[in-house]
Image (cartoon, rainbow, N blue to C red):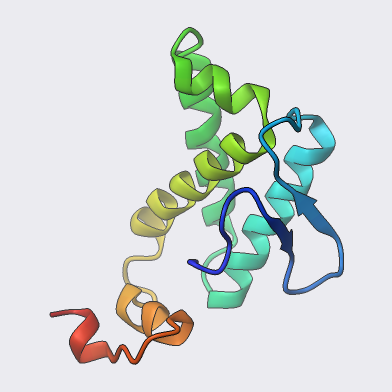
Length: 125
């Protein structure tokens, strides 16, 4: 997941559409839809359960609705980059919740996506 930094243009692996995430870009329903598709492309890339994205967005929505006055929640509602980061954090929680027994363990995912010479043995300590 380290290949998707915030404040850059993100190209979905399965399509040519992009999400430009600058701090001045407001969160719109269209941007939320693109981020949702981007989260699905990450899940599909790793062969995880697609239900994970629904759970992740549920976590994000609950955070935003229960913490309406929290500065982080306000920031996530104001711009795409913050919502994208929230979505990615919630995706991590969703993967931990639903895909624990998945064949794509965090160590094998880190090994496959790492630019360094990490092996499963060194990734898990």
